[in-house]
Amino acid sequence: MFCKLHMSWDNIAEICYFTALAEFLVFSKNKKVSTMTYNKMRMEKDAIEMTISRRRYRVIKQYLQQPIVGMPEKVKERLEREK
Image 1 (cartoon, helix red, strand yellow):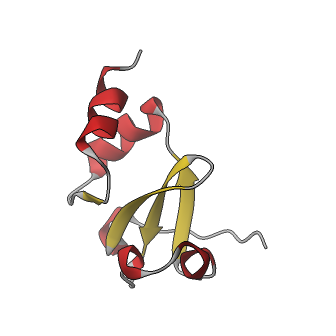
Image 2: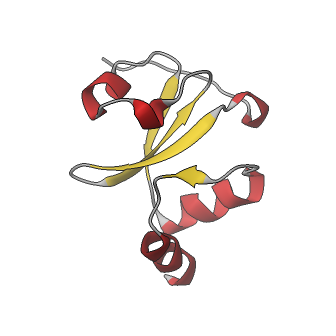
């Protein structure tokens, strides 16, 4: 199921790091997705899932007012130093 969802930075309640076949971030409007299983998180209507890349990470950091839940320090370091 594919849906479009618009979310302003001010409405994001939580940003979580997940890894399955790829690394991705989940932006949630009103629920704590970090406490959900992967399958339950995928069914959440008020969440946006996005694969993470160095360029996306740098843009997100500009607007981010909160930590990314579950992102290991090694991943942060790799994304910050990649060219």
